[in-house]
Amino acid sequence: MRNGSKSFPLIALILCLTAGCKQKQPIAGSGDEWLSWTSDQKRFYVAGFVDGWGNGSSEACEKIDDFTTIGADNVTDPTHKFDNVIPLPSSRCRHASDHFSKARLSGGDPISGRGVFVDVSVYTNVLDDFYRHPECLRMPYFVLLAHLNDREFKSGEDLYKLVRSGPGWGSFSIDGIDKCLSG
Image 1 (spheres, rainbow, N blue to C red):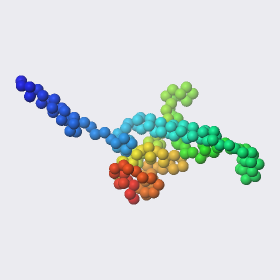
Image 2: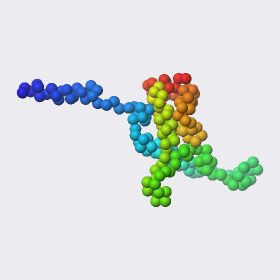
Image 3: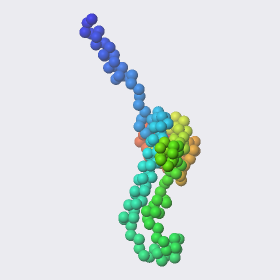
Image 4: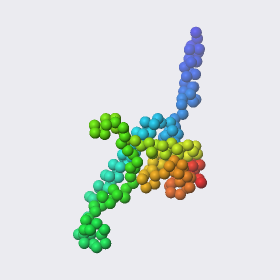
């Protein structure tokens, strides 16, 4: 065999790898990526998002007390609705913060904690329904999740209608997202 014939398979392999034989990866943060995940991957992501949101909010609210001075005037103010009890700013902050209370502990033994997991299917189902609309596959799932707090929670179809209505979504520099945002 000549040297040229031995190198042909190697050249073919290199061309194949560089010319598109490899599988196209979905864009990070996109609906394509979301839909490529298993239900466990979605659950872990959303559980982490909800936990991180809660921890971040709580830590931020705790810091408010460090930077706030509560004066004695607040105690005797007749318009104060807590009857001489001064609500700490952190408490007021936590009350005003967005919550994701639809996440529930499920399964296993709640006493030992064995087999218990965080059920966030209410959120993953909304995103699955939302991404049934192919024109919105470029909308980042983390942006959508932030709008699934208790105050703004919607079904997948209602979230789609809200996004399509236009206002309130800020500006994005993501190619193709305008197809989803235009009403």
